[in-house]
Structure formats: C-alpha cells, structure tokens
Image (cartoon, rainbow, N blue to C red; front, side, top):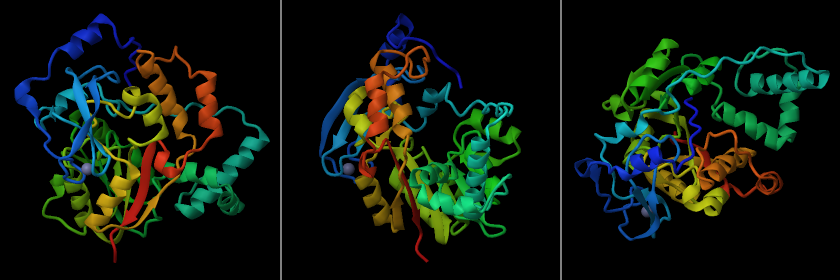
Length: 360
Ligand SMILES: [Zn+2]
C-alpha cells in the first residue's frame, strides 16, 4: 500500500480538491440506487478524497428518505470513475508473512485450537492442530466470528466446486478460497490489480460481473467484498450474482454501514464515506431488503468483533485532517476504550457482513 503521510489540508490536497471533476464526466443520480425512491435529503456536502488523495472535486452525499441508504449525486460517470483509483490499495502485493519467532506454549496451544477449528469447519489442513479446537471455538463466539470472517464464512467445498470473487483486487480472497479447495475465478475493473493477481497465477479477468453475461448457475459461491459500494447499480450487480449462483449456492457480502456507530460519531470524516469511490452506502435494513426482493434467502448478518478499532483510528485521523494511514497519530484512549467496552448490535457495526443463499 502506498502510505500517504500527508496532512489532508496541505496546499497540494487543496489544489486537487478545488480542481473540479470535468462536468461532462459527471452523471446525475435522480433516484436512490438501492430502492429507486427519489425523495432525498442532503447528508454531507463538500466531501473530498481525503483517503487516497487521487480524485479531484467536491461531492455531495444524500440520504434516501425511503430506505436511509446514502449516495453521491452527482457522481463520476462509469467511463470516468477509473481516474479515482490511481493509487488504490489492491495494487500492491501483500507483504510476505514475517519470519516466525519463538512462541510460548500458550501461543502454540492457541494455534493448535484455531487450526483444529478451521480444519473441520473449512477443510484446511493447517498444522499443528487438535480436534478439540472445533469444540472450543463453538464456545468462544467472538473468536469464532473473527476466524470465520477471515474465511469469508464460506462453506466447505465439495470437489470441483467453483467460486467467483467479484472485485477480486490482487487476489487475497481467492488465495484463502483456494487454500480450502475452491476453484476460484476472479474479476476486477482495475488493470493494475489484475496484473498483480495474474502474477500470482490466479484465474482472473479484467472487467466486472457483466463479463459473465450469458452464463447462469455457474458458481457455487460468490464473494462481493467491498464491491457493492463501488458499483453504480448495486441492485443489478446483486441480481447478476443471484443468476450466476447455482440453486443452494452461497453469497458473501461485505460493505461499510452508513448507520454504524462510527458513521454517526465521525459524520463526514467517517472512513467509510470515501468519496467519490463509494457511490452508495447501505445500512443493514436496506441491504437485507434489496437482497430479499432479488430472491436471496437465509440472509444471515454476521458479527464483526474488533472491527471498530481500525475504523475509529482512520476516522479519527481524517477528523484531525491527517491521512487515515499516517501512523504518527494514534487513537486517543477514550476512543479506544469505547471500541473495547461496547460492542454495538449488528445493525450498528462498522460493516454490514452477511451471507445468503439462492434457494434450492
Ligand atoms: Zn432508497
């Protein structure tokens, strides 16, 4: 990742934001991209790219009065949005894991328990392991949630089962899926991300879910992680995903929650806003409603313990007019305490994380 240590409001940043996005490359959004209602209220004005410092312009976000989703209006047109992804974080390869250091017996025990759980739950072959781990993790709900989300809550695949990662970036999720036996296919609109994924021998193509037009019932699982907030028509994307799933297939969706505790606390400085790359921001109710309308069943919202800390830290830095990745600025004690003591209910967590199925 390109670590940008700049303070947001330096002369260079102001110059970037004051340069308008070309008018002919903007499109109006007359109605809510989630529910189609046109009744809206201004939520935030003057939003800028204070995350990656790539996109020019100042943006307005509206809240739909019908479903409470947030959306930019106007927004970059589909043909121009690529300009907002110049230094995006899926471009670079993830660093290799640090060399193992001598571990205590307790650490070794924890590892054996975790591996025992993932081997049974997801079909990994991680060693050392103990089968007792599976049962221990049934009792340690928060620990289990942390591990489950690392594996995208995927079912254990039968031999030959296929998974599609829409917005695969440089292939991190595909690597996890492959490690548990999925035949993984990926697609991403970002040429640099695709280049990075190809260098790692992943089966990927440049584009989006429309690359699979004409196919149906082709995949046993689909991952849409941090994707639906980026697409101009999330309903269409989810509809296509539904068609591409086999009956009984599973979809995993993860997206920032505009009704989260952090979003309310930090307002326009909340890290999840990320204008103008995030075009649409859901809350759990609007996403679940849309997915039900499309036909998904067994929609299950997942807990994300510990997630607030990172979002609070990055939002705090933005509030202080720093880059969210400027490591000089730490999370103040009172904010850290809030993320430790209070676990918000799922509808107030920082991300909406869910799985659902196409019915049999
Ligand atoms: Zn709406």
